[in-house]
Length: 142
Image 1 (cartoon, rainbow, N blue to C red):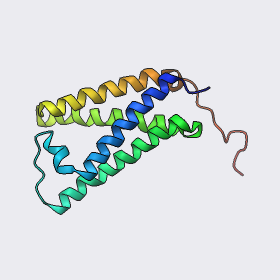
Image 2: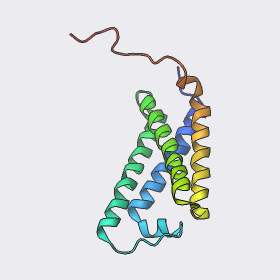
Image 3: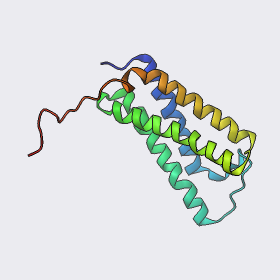
Image 4: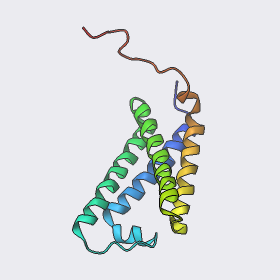
């Protein structure tokens, strides 16, 4: 099954979003978090703990984008995109329940994450509910 334009757009939106946000967190964490009304300070340990998942998010963005150009990466790209854009809003919703209402910027991020998750689900719905092909089924391990 070839990749449709809609699927490529969904991976492009999710990949570019993750890459841009992750890259911004790594390169300018103070500016990024200030946009949410959060002051980070100069604690090197805190900044390291902030930059590390930012780098991970940027790396996941690259994996999402690879699925656009390399058919072999498509299953990984879809899995990574759905994991990121379902896990982030899930975590924010847990925070909302346990910690209360965050800033308007954080709520806006939640809305964008849910919108991207919905875009991904719409784009890949036919692939998500079809039986998985097992490339190693014909050659059982001995």
